[in-house]
Image (cartoon, rainbow, N blue to C red; front, side, top):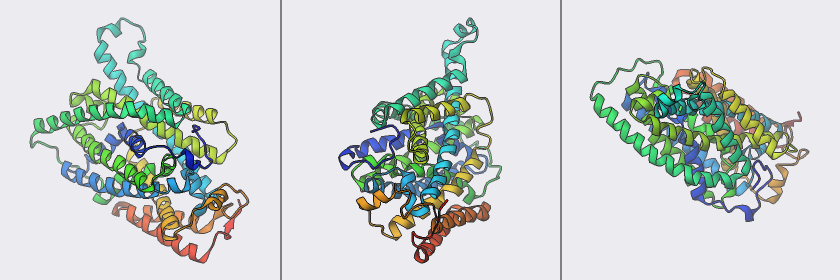
Length: 434
């Protein structure tokens, strides 16, 4: 497997096990940003309400991603290529741009959070020894962020098999630390007893659900990127659903508990307050690596779909290093985290609705001729296909117009309906050649 290959996978190359696919999604979703979703709900909701929102949103968002993941073994192409029959080659290119740009933010945020936690833990471990060294790199958040970014980029450059091998080591370690974090958070709840701060409001119940679902569907544009290497469609769907839903239902409530206990939504402070500073730093470091494996890989595929002749290694290293550089710059990445989730939900939920409508409601026949047409710049999917783009626009508009009433259901329903109606009146010959 090449690090950023966008051509169809040979059927003989579909050797990835569903267990490895499961580990990839588990590794991607056990990360500081998952904690951050739970923490972002605490100011507006009680702990019990936040957990209910997390459960509902995690299941709904994971189900949408998993339904599309089942297409990977059938199509054997990356997600941005699989979107071409519904949106057109140029329209799918817009999806690739969204994916490419948003992943720089994810890479930077992950490196920044993990770097901060590792630097704090290093200062605690080494203590006075660091004070005798001028400018100690071990206590520098920037140095840790850069090191983690380079490490993740190197592993992705080595290809999906290297990622799978790394996940086999990292994910079990993360699960072990996750258990320790669970015990620590339960202890924090018991220590606080019934004295829990009252929610101050700010988000409606439906908007809170949007945030959780928005986080889950942020993975929607990788639905086929890894599952295309797996032979079983049903196994892929189950692996993706369980990998995403289980980790979110487990980790998001811990973020809510830790944020409530610490009185802060900063992941490093949250972990330190529940008595898991050192182990928490290990968790965040491993989680950053496994999540950025996926972020770099997804961006590489997006760029290669736009510039097929680009060299795999150059694409992977440029993406990893740019994201790493952004994470090394001090800033306020987490201040707009909730708004970021809302924007991603508005952009990606309609894409999910369109692809569900195209591949399931229309019951598209997938054969070798269909797959070949996905790469034909002069074929039936050239340019921008009007039904898909109209559905994407309408779904995003419905999401924003719904406002605090909750945009997930309106966006999904409108995108499915508009695409279904549009595709019945306009076939693939109705396009704009841009």
